[in-house]
Length: 576
Image (cartoon, rainbow, N blue to C red; front, side, top):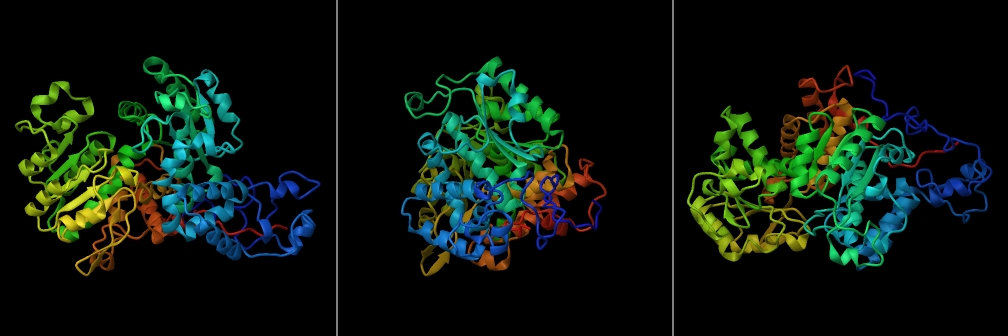
């Protein structure tokens, strides 16, 4: 494709003849001849329910298989949203949406795109966490691939069982650290399924190009091991060489089956495996860890945007983290990288502006011997400090970031201490789901007398304090990974580079307007997410071209337009 040719491509091979046709041209939904439209109605990719026209009902053997009425997609959407709003329990909404996805793919994505702010908490955090906990009970039809220890030696064959050949994004988990809920084993599949539905809805990557995978190596969750409805292997988790060999076979098979340019997104692996897998495969595969890199990128975007409210540059601020796992150290490293980029100073110098507290207290030099390798760069010269409150008083941070996975850690005393040190304390309570947030939006605003700039990982409602309405920011990875993935795909990138993450952060921060700042927002509203994703994709792709990592040549002239043209549209097609 040359730079000026904006076809409706989605960046994938044109298997069904959809891409070659414009949105208004009719297409043939059949790849084989059939005797009855009954099968067509049971194919989620092509089913339109009551929206099949009279002509289509005649041409595709549907006459009599549907009631006589013909509804538009808009009316179908209106009816479904009405039905969804009747449910009082979020999990009921989740299962209703999953049913719709299995029945009518385009209507599912139309619903999600048009009602993103309302439905995001259902298909993603916090409801997806509960869905994973109960996945064995609500499991209906497999979505994605399950690769367990039983498949050792046969993983390539298993990948070939997946019907799609042109896979571009794989989201994979081993279920060991699902959100803040711990080891959910095979039931972690809800996470890859949810993430990939957002890749399509928010980033416009075609559904057929997305593959959710769960690697089942057992679980250490006693409750699941004793649950008669558990869907995974009933054994303790494999570790060490057995685990490493299975993962290596998986990574090799993926590259062999789908090529160099398939993006593999690691999701919700435990700390020790997450860092190791990213380090081991980032030089040989196109890999991205959402918990380390996606979280870091979205938080950095919030920090860059908040400078308009806080004043100064990133280098002028002091950062204190509660939590020193994947998210905490990943964010800290990206902040240090961005300061290096802005000031030209060495990264080791910039790390000294960033302090981390773990379960044993402030990470300091005297603890270096006993620290895990990923914590060592953050061990600075300081006397030992045991509690978060004492750390706030000693370090005097301007920014407090929570990635601990433990709720209620930002107590009234901690938040009040931040408020006494800063005119506008920036407080980011990032742990998911909502129940695990370090503090609520209401607490942050109330305890700082409306002076805090607040962001969280899960959504909080707007809050009024002293006559002023505050809109809490949501540092949600869904701002970054769909656009980031689209940028990687449209450029044909073969590796992920840190500079691509910085480009994504800067692109997101640039979308925050004066109108947003007036409400205390440091992230743009999700209602604009497709436009935001296209801008992020363009900046990520531009960086891939600049670094010589892109393989789709020549570079398109207008990357934003090109990204938008590659986005999947959920509008119904006309069948001839």
